Image (tube, rainbow, N blue to C red; front, top):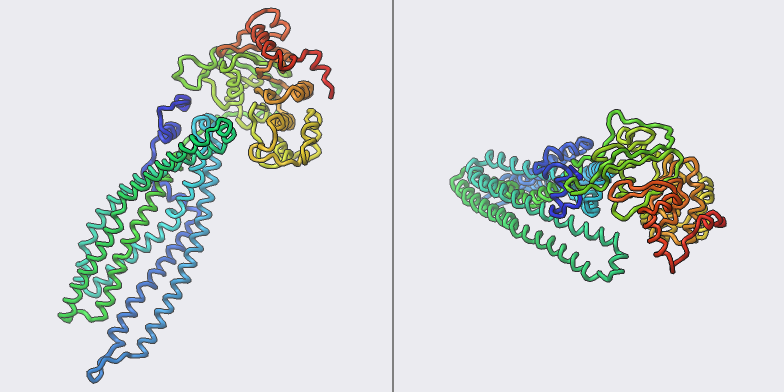
Length: 625
């Protein structure tokens, strides 16, 4: 399935993500969001209880006002007098309720905040672990910025929805419900005067929810696009500067921001009617209540204090309507982001270990490609690898050469199971690599690429990735055994030198040396060097050539290179053309055959003339330490 979408530019980014996940965006998120709260359900229940207490403190105030009006104001000898005792009690009660409200609100924020940190961090770890578990093919087809947007901003957007949203919605519903019950208790006509507003509100809410959810889905998609462009710009900033494309790249970013802002503005315009509409409903409700309340007061059916109390309840009933626009907007934004997060989580790794996968402790290093066929895109007219047969004996140094794009590096992807063969088998010590656990396979097969990655930290930190238990002395000794000490120890802080993000503080050649030492420290049974020396100068290349004898001792080595001087000493050379092996043999034998290898080598020698003399076998063997 996934192979079918490699390079499918006709698909939009979100459509490509849906295809990789093998499902569409799930619009119903409620059933998937609830399980996220399971680890903090105790805190959520505590927040709910605190919100109930908060609502209770709110409803005490109208009662206190009613008592002051009806019991505190008395007519004595034709004059109105205020009962100081009733006023004092009401004041103390109101002050106590305000203090309680502030304390409860603070406690609620603290509990909900700790719950939010737990939920969001758990989700971040889950997304991060899932991203690491995805197969390499997913990253080949998905923009890094979109993955970052899912794991960062989209996860952040869920916090107000998951933690703050439920208590606030509960508070709003409780205020509406209690206010309605108390209005019914005081004077049923007051309740019925407001009941007609509810169907209108529900209908408007449904419309607003649909409009807002569609809008925030578009906003989330536009945000992912400019985030992806930002990440790509940071990664390729040197190339952008080299090509003097800053202005055009900035213009592209401006367009993406314009699309985001336009989507945001258009969506807000479509949804901006809801808040004023609820304001109109509030005004209408208040007006109706005053009319009904005045009539009841004139008929002697309710007291002045009850009318005043009812006004409070009306605002408590209609007030949450003003909050619904924010709550539903938060819901729409959160669910739009949740849809994309779960789409990522629903994307299964393309390559998984079977139940019977083995993890051999010892590997001799016999490698075999048996009638292998592979295409990144199954719809392609010609596969990258077709009917390829190649055997590498344990301890043999095999060099693979051939034109660019004819499948040399793809063999590395298949050997390490970054991709699966479409037909045939790739074996290690006779085991089909599909039957070997991936962690075990990659522990026994080390790979050094042309553009290897270093992580922020020191050189020793990066070497220790291969052997976490190794001491500094052991790592330094490995670098000296490989012959990298002259270069690495000349750095300002030697092995303690900070390499910077992705090794940016080191030269390309220095980074490659660190990666070679790291592979040496890992001590794999099979070592693959894929263009590993193409970025180093002649002097460094010759030193690596001398060190390769030490590096390849006791292990199988597969060397893929364009610079043919790096593979002359290989035990055997395999020539790959159009995804198949067309020639094999030692360097001298292949030259005598006057076949494709001989023509490649002649072209290589011609290109090297005037740059530097191609080193002979004698030169390589005689290179001083």
